Image (cartoon, each protein chain N blue to C red):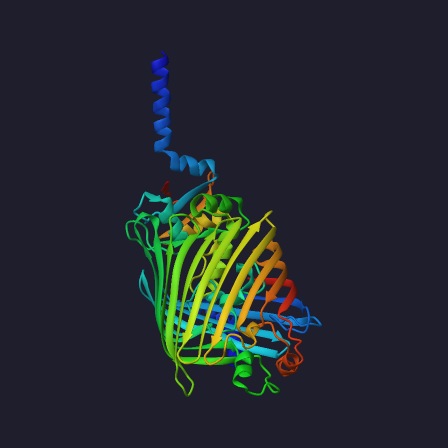
Length: 148
Length: 372
């Protein structure tokens, strides 16, 4: 009995490990969404970070990416920023100040609500955004798995 | 006048109803600030005066347009008020063409890619102190604020989550140089030196920068360098090199740089700084910096008023970040040496003759900086 319970526990741990990324994202309060035309189903955290910081222009399969942010005051943006970009929304704002005033790059467009992010992603080929874990999704949008 | 035109054109284009239909959307950003500065003794330093000065004010407007998916137009103009009067300058105006994901071609007047801060010279909301560390960014001749010509830039992803940012450029550059000390050593008159900095022009400039970003978020290392011919009758060659290291996370900012300059038959300089800033709370930040510089002039013995050839400075700062767009700063500078901290030029000879040159200067600076 003890052996069986250990096996079940081990299996549960392995299963939890395999699905750690989406579970982690949900636990942290956001989910990543892309335009339905994007062929990728998953992306690494570091690749997604580079796309949102405009250091990488394409999805893994090569399709051009068009990131969109929630406004800086959004708690969902803070959660996404810390988990994926490795820093809070404030430091990311400083990063964009550096890019803009050095004449290098411009930040992604910002939307005030989940619904507007979903609408933008739905209508823009290659768009990638994030919304609250419980936000409603429309047609033309699909969820993207983020691997650690 | 020219910069005013950029501002007006950008503002008009952005506000025109036609622009939304017939032209690309224009993004407008800006930065600026004001500060009060007071120095000890008779020396003037970083806009601070012995009697105190309220005039140090600055504003810049940045406009970016993307007429096509592969073409970006960037322009930035800046206005400053100091005790020397008003300064109006074009920071940059250039077109950037995306040749590939890793290669962008730039043509026009572009911020000179050198070190950590050159492209962000006067942007106060991306650094812990009002002013950049003078040991590297002082008006001694290490870097120009921009080059005029052609360049390529890009980012290359490397294995194991490393990446490299690179820049290569060629053209000409102008840099601000504090020439009072040089005039003194050459025996030139100082009575009518109005502007304490002069623009020094360099032609046939070739340069580059490489920054390696490590898998540890916020940690990077890099090197920069350029060489060119001075636009002066002697046509001396100038060569400048620098190294940089940076680690930035949500609470801690650590930065350090070294730079060295060699001008044939004229002068040599070497400078460095190290600075640390820490957010004690999300709003309050403390900061500490040490920077230094040696400047040697050909034919001038090191023993001839040595303080005019050196600069050593400790700076302590306390900042309140209302948001990432607005910060109130209090800086206290303790300076040894007179390469930058000097009496007014017209008083220098008399001060030296009387043996009253103060080699130690304290500057207290208070004010705010913003960006949007």
